[in-house]
Amino acid sequence: MRSFGSALIWILALCMILFTGGTALAGDYHTGATLYCSDCHVMHYSQSHGYSPSGAGFSTPLGAAGPYTFLLRNDVNDLCLTCHDGSSFAPDVLEANFASNVREAGALNRDSVAPYYQTTGHTLDSTDTPPGGSGAWAPDPTEGFTCVNCHNQHGGSSTAVPNPYRNLRRNVGGTSGIEPPSYAKGTNDLTKDVFEKFSNDYDAADVNFNEPDQTKSAMGNWCGGCHSNFHGGPGSTNTGGTGTPAVDFDRHPTAGVNIGAAGGGHSSANIFATGDRNGTPTTPKLNWVKVMTNTENWKPATGAEVTDHTPTCITCHKGHGNKNAFGLIYMNGTNAGGITEEGTAGGVYKDLCKQCHIQG
Image (cartoon, rainbow, N blue to C red; front, top):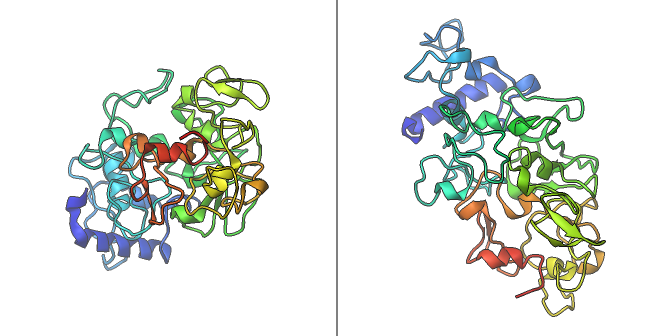
């Protein structure tokens, strides 16, 4: 999709401004007042001018192989990427980032071209069964994995979550009862799962995760709609764990386990807060992975005040992926280098584990 060139990017940018009166980003767009049919649909697949009476203005281009079902302007992934790849007015979600921000969800891959291989995250057009999936759901064998397998293109809602974070779908992966995470923007609401500091905000520094229920993870549960074997808390069939606090897990839990709760040779609140592996908290470390907490204390000063920091899926993985295998975030807590979508400069696999764990 990058072959459309910079001219198309500016055309589409102007188109969005004309339609919305300003810029808008995914998660706060394609919903409510910003749900514009003509962004994605065309009535007769013959449009050759804009929507003003004089024919001025622009619209999303038509794909070359149309017309398409549902009156779409292009195939699903190509249509989404018209705005969401190499764009200055919408989040760039495919491979290298057009903007300078550190994307909260990282990057999808599509063509397995370095450094974004299929092993680095979610792969558009793939027909593979999701890793850890039960086999009950797989992408369409012809169309493959699409953006709308995870995101509702019309915003979506439910009684439980009327305004889901990033337009994430209900019942993702065909798993009944899966609700998307809720979110607050501008002012935090501890009853919501996600806090977005500013409306239309896609920067990792401005997105944090609450924990309204310390026994559950809305984000983890949602990911479990497709990756079912990888989601669970203490005592669940696929996660295991014994005792209170639980230890000896079969798979890493995604809910219900606070950092440092078990003590001993397991995780350490002091290490998570300060990086001090000698057991004596000193000053806060420089870089953290994202965890859930219901105290808004996402970057603690010492381990002493940490009581409810809980890792979940997005603690270790970028939701879309990045340049690392499995979309992992190699975060070196003491590295002075800036945070990237891959973690920190020079970060390696065990740096991620050492964010919380005492060994090594």
